[in-house]
Image 1 (spheres, rainbow, N blue to C red):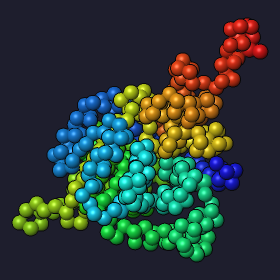
Image 2: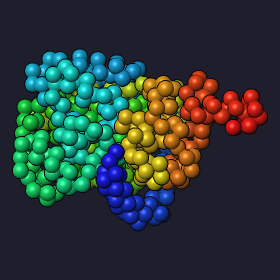
Image 3: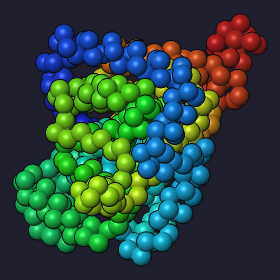
Image 4: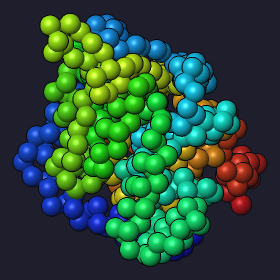
Length: 400
């Protein structure tokens, strides 16, 4: 990342720190933390049971369920679902899981036009190159208003001034115009309630509502997002909001429990009133079954990278795809392999533990990374200078 981008990112992160510090030590947030830690721990320990319950509940609600063992499986399922739609435009909401499976590039290569509806994601999409996000909920937090203005004007052939509201209105108008005839919406989920068969999604912009109103709504979520009840799912989403934005709750919290329907005419059930005629949930494994339980506690708030000294120094080169910082490094081993884990910054981490201290569910990321270094070195992935020192110690009883 450029030094100017790092500076802007750090300023944005300081704003998040300031906002969240005002509320995260409140009694209600502390109670919520304890509750969510118990929810996540129980959910991961009982994942098979909750998965089976979720599948049954979704089916009962008229939601189709698919299981994707790999990211390739997820893409194949999506391509099969959308192949019969003539309009080649897809409305997409912000989702780390969709980034994990490389959805945009995969569908774009098949001549689908995937339009980001989140403002930050749309700005990065218009940037075209060097457009990896820097924070789960603030993907463009490293770009200042002048840079964003240039990106928007160059991409949309416009002449907007560097005024945030004018930029927002221009991008909004362009997105809405592009989505006029879109029939497919794709999103992730912040949490899934297995008992009710409901997907919870939080947002401030209202864009997920647009996505969920398309004829076909596809929801892609990791199996680690499943929790027992709707109350649990709401709790997870609330805590994520506190640590991601510094607010107690977001502007919108969508709960999708089935396709759009009405029974207002003689109590006869009719589908597709205003919203989706078909809802499909794709539950993604992609290495999660092999991951350590602590890795799967994550609620996606991004507070770890906000406080990480390494991430604040080098930016999003520390992490893996949309999974940023140390937790992204940890997940890369299971999503990809040992080499990806090494390349994503396994030895960048200082093991200082600030990520754990500032994690709402206390994921011991530094301990996970330390253990992974041992495993990585055993299969040949370690800094070569370390290998030379090791050889010198063996031969000379000295690192020199």
